Amino acid sequence: MGILNKLGMAVGTASRPAARGIATGDRGRGNDAVALAAVGPNRTPEKNETNRPSNGLKEFMWSLDGLGRGTLLDLGPAWQTTLNFFIERGFRVSSEDILRGWKNFVSEEETQLKQHSAAASHLERGPEGRVERFLKTNLQYEPGAFDAILLWDVLDYLEPEMAKQTVAHLTALLRSGGVVFAMFHSKKPEGFQRYRVADSSTLQVIATPPLLPAQKVYQNREIQDMFARFRTMKSFVGRDQLRETLVTK
Image (cartoon, rainbow, N blue to C red; front, side, top):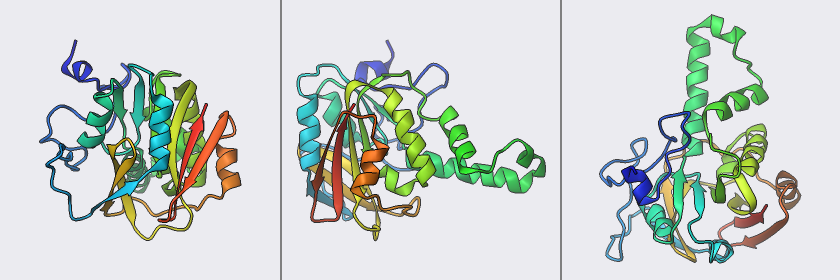
């Protein structure tokens, strides 16, 4: 058994060497130049970090209570704080920073098209074709592989077609009865934030340089339509213009 399996961390499917954004036990190594956060009660808060009470996270953890050795997919950076929180509760955690992956993918395709005119003949430029190519090499896990997914506010920063197809893809990766924790901005965000789990009802909010511009502000009906294949949906609206949404398949 490898060291990652002993720690409870997934490395993706056998079709690739490792999922993008997987954390290792070495805290000195980061994810795409993003350092893993220090952990423990004596950790000094960062200047760009604030704590945020989260009713959505509290409900998310309640939904997972008693699950035992579950599986969780975190679609943000591989923060050691979040990894430790779930691993200590018996979860096997996979981490894939989808926003960074999407940004790099689009940049690579645009460069290829500019440098090699012949590439245009086999690269469909439409949004649907681009998303399909991205999902062929990202988020590659077995159907029903996960009990829970931390989606964060990822969908607000993806192009609408990309957001729609991503939700459909994640739906297939989630087992029946599985839960997704997502966040939506009720107005266009003024800054870019990342999130870590501090405890079962508190998120650490970290202001960081933006990876992508916000693409869309989703209304309640649009969110319901996006997750139409899910059985239940519950939302919590915060004073900071963030709507926490919990959906159960």
